[in-house]
Image 1 (cartoon, rainbow, N blue to C red):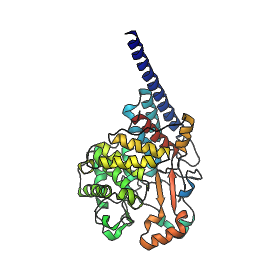
Image 2: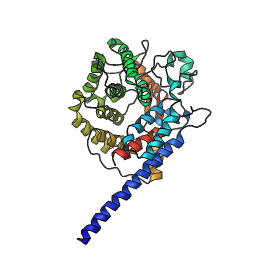
Image 3: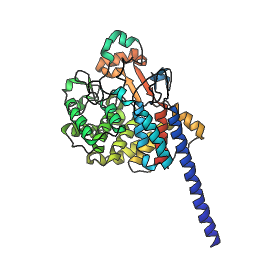
Image 4: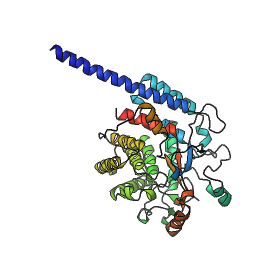
Length: 386
């Protein structure tokens, strides 16, 4: 009896120590994210997080600084796990959110539409990728507001239901385009009257599976009345999953993310808000595809988001052999996995696209990085995978 008592005591002592270590880990990472938040800087916006861009083949780089909406996805990722934070950690998150509160206005539509842009709108923006595209294209490089940044910002701002419904009404004007105006995706998708990626009537229309997932997650989160465009956007996702095109034609169907693991991560986030009948039947397939990608991946951040996707879908995830804390943080923050892709080849199709890709791909394809967002993904992974 005495031995059993000692065993039970040791058992609970181990898990108490383990829990305290995990808590310390999360607190450390939240403080690290808070430390990266800009206090004063000649380039970066106060309250935002450093973000960088460079040509895709170079991998992670801090060569080109970029002010963009990466701060939103840091906030939203951390907020999604708030219920599992300690009181102290929740206060840290409150502090991070408060200091970021003044950044949103700089990306908001200047005409009062309530939508948001990837790049700041309060000053004359500078094209970050290179000098020669603005030189030859003039103002054609300027992108309109987009669905992704709009739902990210509104969610991070915790906008009220009435404003969410108003923006949802605005979204209805940016779907059901003629097939000839839809660029990049396979022809069989061009008859689906889904949402465009952009709030731009005179801008090329693109479909992106991650943008579509984030848009529908916004609709689900705010319990908005589904419209024809919502149903069509769901149809786009279902068709891509059912046909496995999201694994084989992912660059055409997700031109702004271009990574299969990232697509699965965004799909899982949508499905975790609340069940959607059209997607639930494919959970087993998504599980199988995620495990296959996990087993092939040698990128620790990619492995983590795949595990997080599985947890969000309600499955157990594989074990990752994590290195020591300092090495893990370095590998996470300096990771080659981009959170967003600037693919200027996506504006072309057919032989034109193939020709440009052959001659200029290295100069027309940029990746976006944000170390603080990678840290937020690590926090999410550690919490959900315990």
